[in-house]
Image (tube, rainbow, N blue to C red):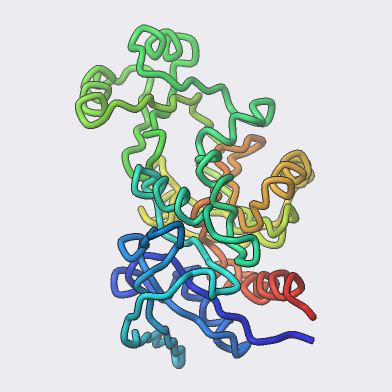
Length: 317
């Protein structure tokens, strides 16, 4: 028998989101349809006091009709998060110290409260570093701030991509062509902004055919879309104009998913999005994977339903 669950969403304010395409809104709306009780709080609302994890939290009501998506916050009150069955950690990157602090606090919740994804593993698996555990599946990659090492990498592979290590949504990604004279300027810009290393990768020409986003639920691929970069753009992220298209998993895609599946399950990284260009995986998104709305629109696969079916089984009496 399934009881009504108390579910709290740690996420960015809904007024700042594109609700029509937002994965978190879709997950929350499906939970509400199932008569679960949903609430909302932000990272700034987290409180750790006398070894208790609390939040200034409010009940959330959602509606969706005729392509109109609306929400209502109720009055916020301070409550222990241990009173909730599920905490959905769905705040968007950047993966910074505020994000890391939230994982430390949520990790102190009792085991009776399920945090998705596991905050300990989220903290230790930032997408562009976690993926290097599977370097045999990746394009040639360098992570460094050393200018000499970066230039040597470029000299060897000529056509390269430069990415911030903890960025998101395609922001700050540069395609440096062999004849491009802006490498030094790009590096100076990055180095003046932060102390973090950069990710440098061999440019994959297959990106012109799309960057495939695959959603995995408990280590199993449950849906995918292909994101096609617009003309004159090397990035395929939908945040920067990439066009979602229907796709199917190739044998290589399935092999990659199988290679990483055991690690995801072991780490309790239940809801994950991976990016594949051609034959190579480029990222494992464990913080706030997106794409389920586009998958549903193009393929009629309701991943939000599959997700809650999976979570509810953990609470069946």
